[in-house]
Each structure stands twice: as C-alpha cells, then as structure tokens.
Image (tube, rainbow, N blue to C red):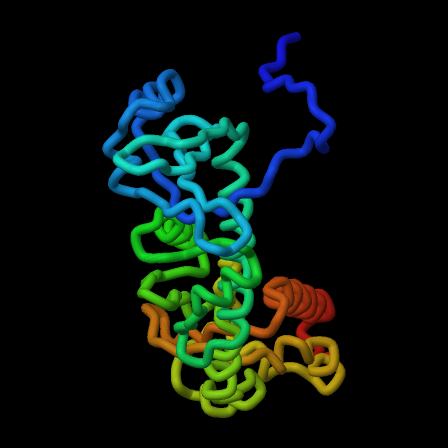
Length: 283
C-alpha cells in the first residue's frame, strides 16, 4: 500500500493551518492537471479570480481550484499577475465543500418550508457566513455550487442569488403553512353528508386515488345502525372531489384507509349471499 503525503521534521503540531476560501473555480480536467504539474506558472484563471491574501481577519485568504471529474483540489494563495505565491494539495476538497453546502441547503429548505406563507423564502448571505463559514457571493463559485445543490432537491422550484440574499421558491406541497391553509380553505364534507343528495341522481361511485376499488353509494344507504357503526370510517371519509363519469358520478375520498372500500364491498357481498341463502328473508 502506498500513501502520498508531505513528510516534515518539525516541533509544531502536525495538523494543517486554516485558510479562508473566498472563491471556488472549477477547471477542465486538462487545465487542473497542468496546474498540478506546474503550480507556479502564470495562469489566466488565477488572474481573473485573484483573492487578496491578507484582509486583516487573522486568516490567509485563498482561491480553491477544483476539477470537473476529480474529488481533490488545490488551495492557492494568490501572488499577483496570475501567479500562485503558495499552494497546497487538498485531498477530497470537492466532497468537503459539497458536505458544507448540503448543510446550508438543509438549513434553507428546513426553515423555508416550515415558515414561508407565500412559497418563497429569503436568507441573507451574511447569516449563512456566520452559521456555516461559507461566503456566498455573486460570481465567487460558491453561488453556482449552492444553486446546483438546491435545485437538485425536490422541494425547490427556483433559486435566485442576489448581492446580499438568496431567494428560494418552494413547491407548494412541501410548504407546511400553505398545506395548512389549503386544508382550512377546503370544505369539510363527509360521505354521510352527501348520501341523501346522491339519492335518485343516477349511479354514484365512491373511489380512492390509491386503489381501483369503488363502492356504490346506494349500497351504503342500506346499512343498518349496526352496519353504520362497523363502517363508520367509510361514512366519515372526507370528500375530496365530485366529478361526472361515464356511468354517473364519481366521488373521490380522502382521510380514510383505501382498504375500507374493499372491506365494505366484501361485507355487502356476504350480506347479499346470506339473504339469498335464507330465501330472501331480511336479517
């Protein structure tokens, strides 16, 4: 087994120094390989993305180079005119950055979907920097990676990154307050409420979007008091939609186990069979 490392003889602790990454540049594989071979040559991508190393923060500020198909990267302390003053190889650099951005995305999505009342949510870049140590600025590379991270999530419909904030628009089905408002807005109509209205209007079928089973509404009206207690769950099911169908009217149910429809049909068939066996006598 072979391991690549920088071996030194020193009294200082072995763990490396901390550097502040202000920009990320993702290079084509060939350009990244060229830099890894000749890190002190002049490069246009360093000149275009130069970072001032000394900003009075107590940390050295750097540029992080990544490659499209590699997980490793390189830290660059810019020396001016497209040259690197100091460089460092970072194993797993992309994974390190992505793990931090995943945490940022979790924070934005978690707080946004729980608290938005409109479907959109603003988070200020300064807050993300304080919480996660990630500098999100327009054009600094982190903005593109964060946008891609957010857009991969099923909750997110759109991402806009401005100078000081990030606006995320969520799909309504993931927003707690929107779902609550929608539920409160919908009329609370139950099966037992509409049975009298369906009488004499042709065939009406109770259905559920999760199964193909249907129940004829007319059969429910034949229930005795005992039968109504046995099938209370079906009678108390919420009516989500009523629409015409080829045979009559379809009533789509929610807030009920879809197996309740099959259970009622089986009980009704058993009752009909028992009546026929008894010569038509009503139990």
